[in-house]
Amino acid sequence: MNIFVCIKQVPSTNKVQVDEKTGVLKRDGIASKMNPYDLYALETALRLREKNGGKVVVGTMGPPQA
Image (tube, rainbow, N blue to C red; front, top):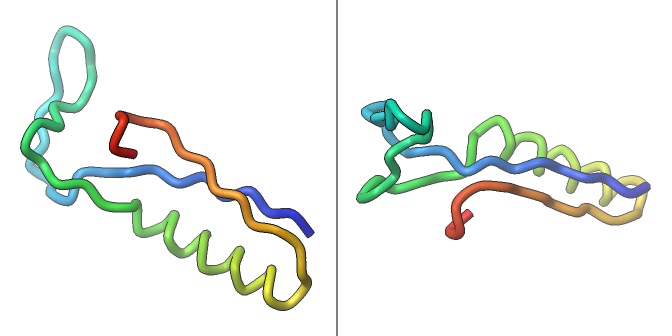
């Protein structure tokens, strides 16, 4: 079984501003973390791999630090 998990990096605070012209989050000086729901998906995928064999592949998109 091959499993692909999508991961998104999100700001670790709820005090984020959005650039009005571009609609992009202003991430300068704000720490990031993995989206907690994506972490659950990754844990589930790893459990399925342990049980059934196969491979887990993770993909993400975002700024370079992602």
